[in-house]
View (spheres, rainbow, N blue to C red):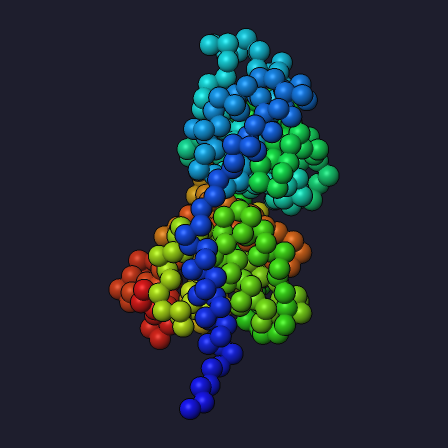
Length: 346
């Protein structure tokens, strides 16, 4: 008896196998990497940070797959402003980011974008303009030539310690701004570079969706914005594999929306996604803890990693969790309309 298997079934089977391989895997920055980085720091004249990295690497970096460190000079460590003679642990945590940022990544971030740090509820703020040659964070210039870079752990030189309570001025638009977003189209486009960036920053499950689904977008002409949950959040969304496509499409908007665009919208702006009947509601608030602006999506999750990837065709924002299809009685509370036929149970 002949057995007929559709190409769609094969595609979903391959994706299922991809997830099966991805889920159990967990890696962290190796001891060898830390040792090499500390040695290069010392040889480059950053003796204080070299010693700090050796002493604190186990507690700070042992669970991270990648990281970025901004290191001040030795003279900054010896400033008399430190009451104990050395910077506090919280200040040191403020200079470690739980993500890998190439210098091109930093250059591509919009003004006012936030960068997460290892200091809970405290982020760094981009204070340079998008695609400037120089990058400034919290008003401090970043040396574009890394002291150390192995593709997982990168260290940049800065002239002084970042100020944790740094604030910026950002004027919100007094008039409503409505984004002009196109409808979903299909074709033969490829977003390989974006999916690679997602994987390198801990968003490999969404990268797998990107590999499978966005090959159907046309010739890289479709400009899109993706709101991406991280791997941990997506694990709870994987139900029937036949519904994975609808899980992914709810996170895609058919236009380019960078961080400056998002915080410039009037509070409560609604964006149509590529999942018919599913919309994204963007709520904006001033974040006094992180000294910047925070955005909540559908009053469910925060934008925790603005512009984790960006080029001229695609912008990806990292979310703190997954977007859940609301029940009918939740529609009024969320201020978002959902089509009953698109409701998916997990």
